[in-house]
Image (cartoon, one colour):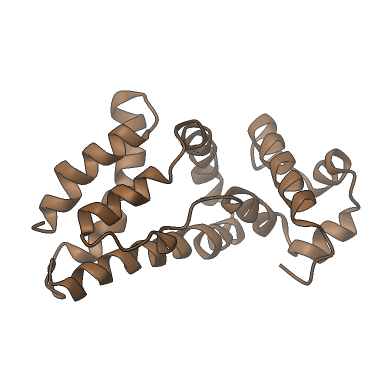
Length: 190
């Protein structure tokens, strides 16, 4: 974000409004005019602060999302992954998964949205997860060249997509912990 004069409280409020609008109308029908009106901002301010609709949407989704890299070292990968899962909020995950389903569809026709989501959502999450995996390598829990190591982010994203597709349910903490214990950790030989 370009230099902002928004207070953190106002920024959080604005992001919440963007997400509400996104849930109401979907990405394609969401306009900067509608965001400006609903947030009582000027369109010029929105563009000055975020540069584009894709970046504003990605940052709104990212707002207040837990950061795995901030998980304290528990002494084991299992402990670190469980601590990461404990940061999750079931209600928020349910709302976010529904929102992301709609955005995944919009990504196909909008390369700018795809890039913004990768930059603001995917890369920070992958980097945070990598911090936990690197700790496990340093501790000797996983070999640095373990063949499953590069696929851990894919496994986790797959869990979120598959749970909805197969079970018609959103991921919650209990499912996430069970998935980590039954799939991710055994795949890594932990």
